[in-house]
Image (cartoon, rainbow, N blue to C red; front, side, top):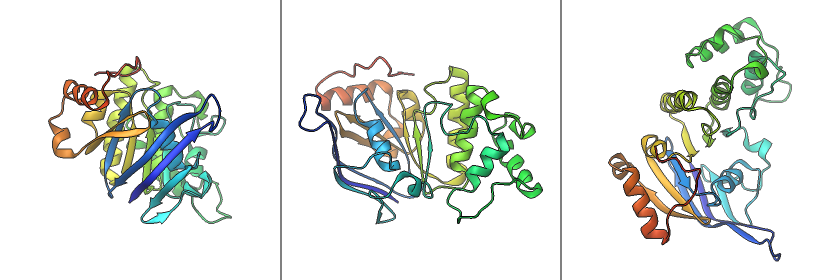
Length: 264
């Protein structure tokens, strides 16, 4: 479904600030895979997501969806195949538009030109039905401005919008990190439910090691721009945070020293 072949990225080449962001990344996701990504600050996780989504282009290598190279396509063209939820609850939605207007915009993604964003009765009924799945009452607030929602409500809406048209690839970029523990747990539960219900192929970056182990069928760990661990479902099922930390230290030769890492 998704493949990265020998992807490398270098920032500020030839200067004193030169930094290797990604080195020879080789990664394949089968249809329906839910892969969690963990690693310290500067490991290359965000760069990986940006290259898949089209925010950045690799210096070397290819990004393919269903065998077709997409690494030369701009971000807006990739949006027909890729949905993304960001860390910031303010991103991914239009705050001055209503909930139903935001959903209409998401629904129109990838549709032919000329598709109208207007909300008619049948579309409104469909939006209510989809919002009910979230279980937080947004179906009764269709005409509320999104900017008035709480961070958790807005992130739940962003998650629904990103998955509304069943994208071939869902990218979750630390999408619970900015929320308090209760709301983070709500979004985690909704994420698991939606990904399972829709069978979405998903790549999720997280700083929460317990979350990385609990969710999905596969876990990869990054360090200094490389994938150093790729743990399949059967091993992941019995994995503990302590074992994961031990494997990281054994392979990388140093301790995981990122204050943002949450051990669970």
